[in-house]
Length: 281
Image (tube, rainbow, N blue to C red; front, top):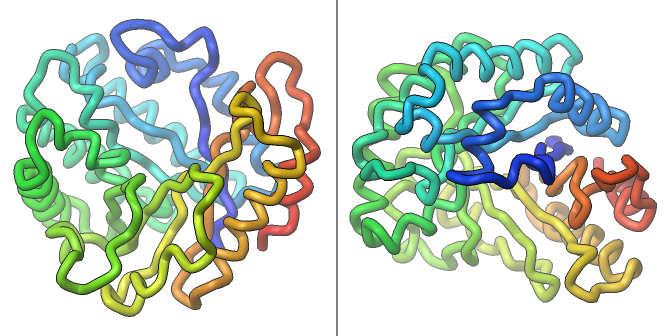
């Protein structure tokens, strides 16, 4: 069962042109390694880091540099016995490029990742793909993703593929998205405090694919009480237990002043959600 944490940007990295550009261009490995180690201390067996398509399209760093940083993450995770869940980037984060022009970038990333075998949990092609509907439309985004997933299948044999989504999951075979035939598992992100425990039914049955909650989190800035945040974590655990085809969950995030198991300012463990997280298998 996957019990993982997302690696969030530092406050100092929220800079133009985009936060994930800054994460990957400045590449603070000392901080990244420290946050991974904190995640492991809290029981994580996997970590996820969102990639940057924008930093590649702007050519601020070379593809070779980007892939070497990605490889370092995979190598370190493997060396301490956990899995790296990679994410290719975000369609909102392509700079001035047309998203269709950066199609080769995730293919190169996936090829790089495939070399690490079981140390890599999988590859989330793009983060929350519906965000690209504004620029390309739903059909355009799904066409782009399907063609890219096909390319990755050819180039990166054995790598498990997903495309994450922050919308409610489909409820019937007729509403399954076009990507369903080209992925190995679902990745859904959940932040709504009103989410129902049966939200994922009957997704596994109609698709035949396992389910991962790739992000979930409870904010300390939206007025929720400590008890409410703890109960949200337990609600996610109940969702995870609701079906036999769940792979597990990754919380957002290990270190973050708003959502983190640790706040960034003092690296203090937030016991309300940390105690609930401890109950995840």
